[in-house]
Length: 235
Image (cartoon, helix red, strand yellow):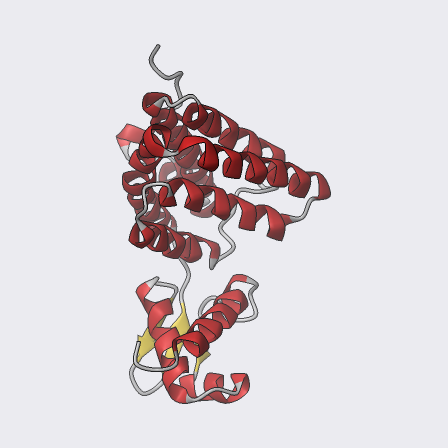
């Protein structure tokens, strides 16, 4: 980044929140200059924040017009989760090998916080804690770049309100899916950890595709490798 990094990050966070909450609805067109003026910043950090959103495929740049908020269809959800599977499944296995007591303690705190948020039906807090758990597992391997990529993939999914929470499943059901992942990491079992992480991600992806597709044919058009994954891990 060439501008003030802290200002760029703040503008990015504000714009991301506006997209996620629908204040900037899918398909809407916006001027970078008007955004900069509205947020009280110069054009450089506003432009750099918009470029970050474009990298996350949350907006498209239109020459001489500004940027447009895009909608994600089920094909993109499939691609996003294909990428997350490639990154997060081995990360879970690695966490089981190298995580140790400190990571397990951190994950236990997050699991408890997920339970509190589920009980209070606090969707914002629940989502933040969900992200925190996945990020902690990835960062146990020390790779900040992978964590940032997964954050961007999750941002892209969240941008159109693509969530299964309280639609296809409850917050408590989502929390419950994380428990065996944490237990496998605690047990130092990389096979079980990768299995349960894969199950969790594929369950989420299939439910999202079914919600977004609004078509029986499309809802079944995930990769063949996703169709028989929800099984018990090998003994």
